[in-house]
Length: 407
Picture 1 (tube, rainbow, N blue to C red):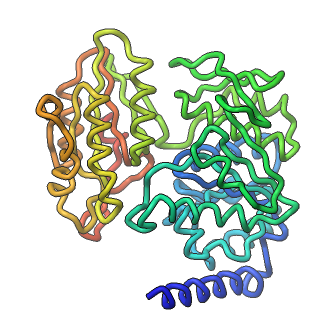
Picture 2 (cartoon, one colour; picture 1 turned 45 degrees about the vertical axis):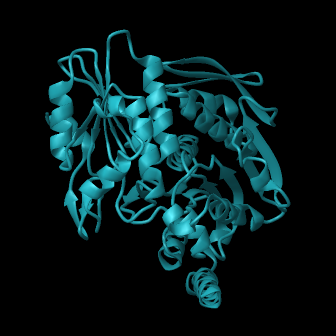
């Protein structure tokens, strides 16, 4: 079996390299491509860097989870990191249209399946590593080693930027050829920040002599901002202009999107679909909520994906909410009731009293709206920007923000 897997990976690498060098004329050599990898924060980091570079007047491309963009031409995306033929075709078009920079999300699947073989990166960013995709990688060690391969393959004249505060932050850059840099809030780092303000109006970070202000919310976004600012420094961008851009920049679609209803209920949509991301977004909401207000969370776990995280996410979501509504989140080929039952595995009798179950996600959101009173907060977690529910191989139109606003 191992020999078959090895042969398959060699074949994938060969196809990817042929796509890059022969079919499309090595387009990555004509571009400055910065790859962003990690469990959480890839989309925010890559998207905001794209917005900054564009605002500075550079022709820029973006390849990621929400969309692919060639300058201002937006394209739909299927995978976070496209297959080698699609990827190199995109890069060729970016080069032909005069793009200088490309910011690209690099998934663990994309690394392991050699989709990025033959791509020349001028820099790589590591955000964090927490439990996800263990249905594919089988263990955290394998997941980590896959991410590490991206940095091991960076050329000597490129840069590698890592989160010093993350458990894997130092180890992931160990024994690599690229120039190493670290960012952090708690540990010593090349780019060290102090949080000056963290509330519902946004974030203020002191990074050396620079005060960074942003409308982004939550401590987790402090790390994204720090990674973005550090990268802007390493790329030689005009920092004074970058600071002004960051003051008004909006987060990517589906990342802590929020609105206040006429009845005074705060609705939040977030892509949090891992234990770590769900915990961070709920802790952020808990920091902001006023006395007497309640957190009502609508969330589920994906089918045909890492089953080990279901009981963990169930525990986190219920513990940190006042009302937890368990529902479907792309059940795919699995029975949603079975997934929800696994989410309830570790819940105590008292925690179960806070739980409601609606396998139909639309009805779950309706229930959240019925439950909410003025001052309460509804969080719809897990789908973020997605506009579908994947059920038995069919993608049905569904968007959390549309549903929440409708009701």
